[in-house]
Length: 233
Length: 237
Image (cartoon, rainbow over all chains, first blue to last red; front, side, top):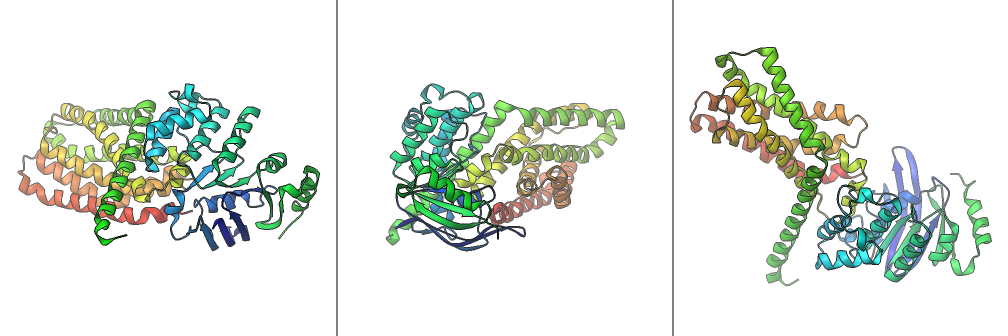
């Protein structure tokens, strides 16, 4: 079963096209990096996969479920980490995770919250309000929020935002260990090579190139990436 | 699923729905107790309006009794607009609305939680404002009948207002749009609430007021029902 099976996704914002017939297939447990210049459609594609944005046309199955017909079923099984942390600044770290655990209908909430805080190295910040945490600590907490319900599909949009080197390493470790299928949108080519099994290059709302990272080095990836910039509809 | 398991599954889903609702209401009330930006601001607004009415109108007792229902409900209406203005704007400004939309929630839970939180916050403001109104204008507002009318009116206001607040928050002109959309819709609610309050202040027995209460309850049910049906479509981007 594919974790992501997107076919012919089209998305218009008003009259402006953001996706123009985008196809993407991601196997269970596979990690795919979405690359492309600004405006290529990476964030829109991730929002469509996250069921936050409904495509104008196209078909989307996530984890075997028709995501356009049953988005709520899909939401229970995907985790999203983006620039925005989706955390309440005036709630503590533990209160934020507890809230999301309740919304996802998880059991053993306290144990799960404590375990996730420990996993991201924030046990000693459990009772601090999020607004008092550094940006990097907030991003770690957002990672804990995204993984709290053990998702089978992780959608990461520039997940390194605000993270220092140890934080980035922790993120990579946790994502690898999760065993989830991953779709990662990033501009950091080194990060894509290190974390992903496959890179997918987007330009002007379409997939224009795909390659396995095992067959790529950074120089080749830079060269391929450079081809995306001049692409116009 | 075997047929005999269906009621159990339905009960489980209902329990999950209720737990999500409680979690969201508790979150909103906890945030309000920490920020105190809505309740304090709205309360100060209500007391200021009250003082302005008193200075501007300088009412005799008999005149006051006739005008207080209208003054009271117009004050609550504008105070409510201030409360609603923050309901979804804070979520959108902090980027937390997407976090909620990513969760496997029936969208109606999100709507109902905002309605309940708005009723609680407005109710607290009203509980402070009513005795002050009663003392300043020397009218008996702290009676079960008036309190019941205020509850019905507040629920209707929150039910319609939460839907329009969600709509307005998606626009740049949300502060202007919300009253423009909401106030015309609330005219029947305002009339019923003010007339019920007027009857009660005139010493009317419940049977005289009952039709206004029935109208208020009907409007509450109508606003809640329509909003629950429309809310998901409204949040679709």
